[in-house]
Structure formats: C-alpha cells, structure tokens
Image 1 (cartoon, rainbow, N blue to C red):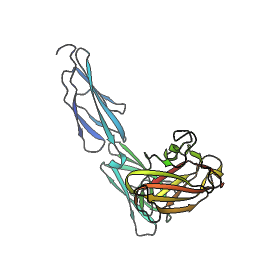
Image 2: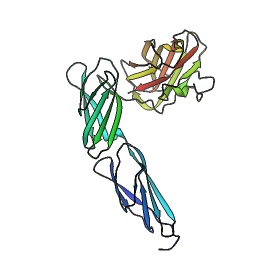
Image 3: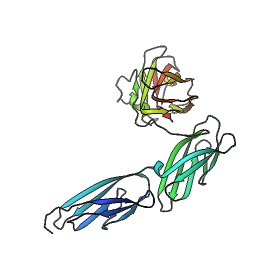
Length: 308
C-alpha cells in the first residue's frame, strides 16, 4: 500500500429482519483500520458489522477509514426510524356506545406495551386495550412498546370515539392580520402561535372594537381538520379570545365558516379542544377573532393547533 494514500470508503446498508436492525456491508479499499459510528453513541471496529438501534429517531452512520500512513476518508449515511412507520395504531368501535378498541400493527415483534390515558389517568399493559370515552371528547394517550430485541417505540396521539386525530400544525407558519409591534420573530410575535410551547404567546394590539383579527395557516395540500385546540396564555385573562370563527378555503379568497364559538378560559395555560361538526378538506384554515374577554384591543393566545 502506498504510504500517504487516502483510503477509499464505501458501504451498503442492508435492512435486517425488523425496522431497528441493519447490516453494513463494507466495500472500502486501501485502508488499515475502520471505525464505525452508528449515531447512538456506539462504535464498532468490525469489517462489516450489524447493528440494532434501541430507539426510534434519526441516526448518522459514519464510517471512517484509516490508511497505513494515517490518511483518512469518511462516508456518512442518515438512517431514520419513525415510530409511526414501525407501529400503526388505529381504533375500532366495539359495538358498545362510545367504546373503542385500540388496534396495533407492527413491523417488529412486540413483547410488551405500556399505555397511559390522560382523560382518566388510567394505564394498561394490554397490547390492544379497550376504552370508554365521552361522546365528542378529545383524549390524549401515550404508549411505549418494547420489541424482542429491546428496542423501544414511544407514540403519543389523540383519540376520539370516531378514531384517532393527528396534529398537523408542526411546521406551519401563521400569517396574521396584525402582528406584535416587534414583528413575527419577537418574543411575543405571531410565530409563537404554533411553536408547540404553551409557555410562549402571541400578543398584539388590534386597536379595533369590535375586534377583527385573523390568523391563517396554509397547508401543502388540502386536509380535513376535524378538531382544533386553543391554549390560554400566562396573564391577564381580559386579553383571552372569547368569540371567534374557524373558516376554510382552497384558494385563500373564498371562505366557508366551519365553526363558531363563544368561550371563556377559566385558567392560565388551559387547553380547550373543539370539534368541527362537518369537516371538509381545505388548504387554508383561518381563525377569525371578533371579541376578546375584556372587550378591548389587546389580545393574547399561547397556542393554536389543528388536527386531522
């Protein structure tokens, strides 16, 4: 081997018998040693190692080849293991009014499950538990599955008597008719409306009585939003929204009223969920606030989220 010559580094990623298992076929040349790092704090010096990830996530596989003279080369590959791609959870009506059974399909062999339900603070270790819910309610649950190889899948979703509801707010940038004086990126700007953090808020002065304030979300494609939530902010309940409408549009010009509310928040950081009675697919969703609790121009809200 020529001293100082850089190694050639290459490998193939071969999927194993479950979504967490991989084999790495080494195709490198001109190297003395190899160092494999799998993106989860593990290291291998084998030629063509196999590896089992113990959790879902995004991992950078980095192979470093070291030549006789010390020259190095690397190849990096990203592996993504999404919980929803490993385990699919659905619900099925049992025939008993407002009762559903959780159904589980998995690409891995599951050996245990641990469910927790926020609505009544109960738990279950059954693979497919049965739950009674109130009609029209919106209920958060979380579940942790463990596979026969020790890998962990953690999933958190929302369930209703009609099925699961998926949060599709993440990544959406709200456009508002009147922003905070410091702009959307301010500590209390409109970007805080959908940042999934109830400890931040959007605060603005609309200066109109009656109020006529809007926030609009644009989706990449038309989605049927069945439920939405609002979370009150940290102080001054007089700034809370009280009267509003949710509207839908497919051209950002013609709008249909989907839901109308007159609501009082009874606590700070309180999340309330609202069901849209007759949902349809739209590419744009608009929140039109016509009155706040104090009947003045100062308005605040911690979070607005939409669910399909």
